[in-house]
Length: 300
Image 1 (cartoon, one colour):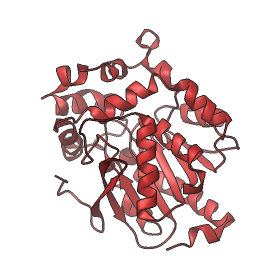
Image 2 (image 1 turned 90 degrees about the vertical axis):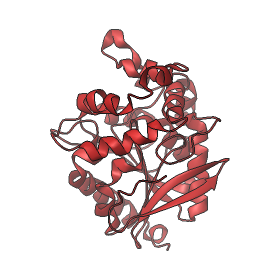
Image 3 (image 1 turned 90 degrees about the horizontal axis):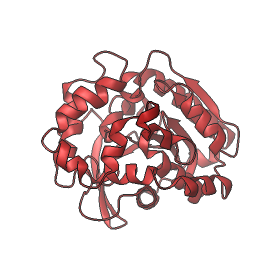
């Protein structure tokens, strides 16, 4: 069941693609399309403050990856390759490509696969607080060198259901968001409840566990994709709480020079903590890409 908490001008939809049913929201009637892809422990709701700012001049779509939010969470594959294929079919279903693709956090491998394997569907890539397997992301699971314990816990079969079932809200509130956010009151009770209800569903941890397992296994494959066919679209790297990590990652992984924005006094959850600053950076980047090839952005 989709949440009743819906910003004005935004509508909910479903798309049956690639053997699953994806929930997504849309807003805006004009301008080149932007597709927003959330990270962990999130859903499309991570962008609910950002969407109206972008939708004033662009068509905007924000999807729940399979196993997250209100997208289906039944038995099946939940790795990044499957999620990338889902997005490929979703863009075809929407008939809006090429899109300005935006990914953050653990969706990195998913959007990178989409951009490299289906370049005709991706006009640009904005990476927000995002790493990639094969380019140092795995190190974040190394607790002996300051890594995060939750990565290994989420990747371990059955452990999230064993430890977190019935404690979803407490985990998100008292650990995930409180430990990585830097802007007081930016993430409130409404946000915590909206995110946690997705994990309370039957199979609600499948999306997260699938992407974290992928992260620890797919480094060599992501590096091969970076080499061939490569990432050739314009790239914007947005760093915040993670410092230069996103910029350093995308500078290595992209086949062309990248643009970079570093936001001060902002934590990991940029779209929730600093939506106006993020929107300004994204719109400047996206509009500059559109100006180079305006015919590609004129499609309605």
